[in-house]
Image 1 (cartoon, rainbow, N blue to C red):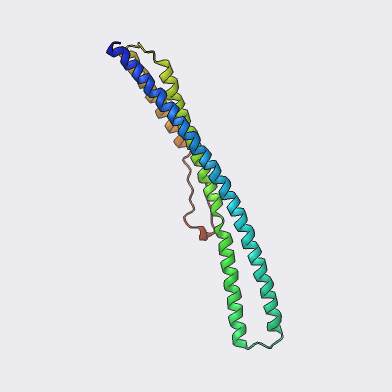
Image 2 (cartoon, rainbow, N blue to C red; image 1 turned 30 degrees about the vertical axis):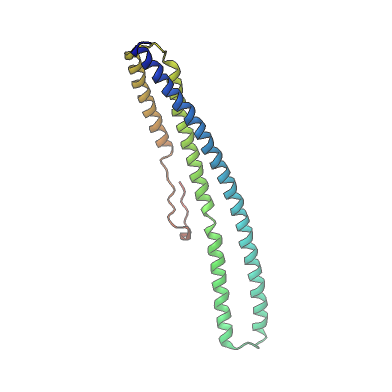
Length: 182
């Protein structure tokens, strides 16, 4: 086989290989992300229920303590400490529930990552199509022209994907109470 024919065969093999292997890896990434999202959702749901149940139990306890306080049998300094503890418990439970908002943020990030996977899959598909378009005995000039055209297509796909995913998660701290996803 002449060197020119070998070049076409090697380029075709390279592009097809990158496309096939890349698509296989992307499928694994997408599966992992989907499982992560599912596990995250289940964990957050359980945490939310647990925190709300804890809060409900603490409120019942506080009601019972208030009944004891109302009898007047507790020294005034103890009453002040109990009220401070009640306020602190309520503050901590509310902060914990608020912290669960990270599910919204992570869900958005997982969704964006899946969009990036889709964009990369398009790039890999383009490489596979180009690889199939190259014949084993294509002249070097044809291969060079096809590769230049492919580079332009890939650059356009990359720009389109960047424009689609330009928006970012703006939340810096979970305790700020202000979630601005996109």
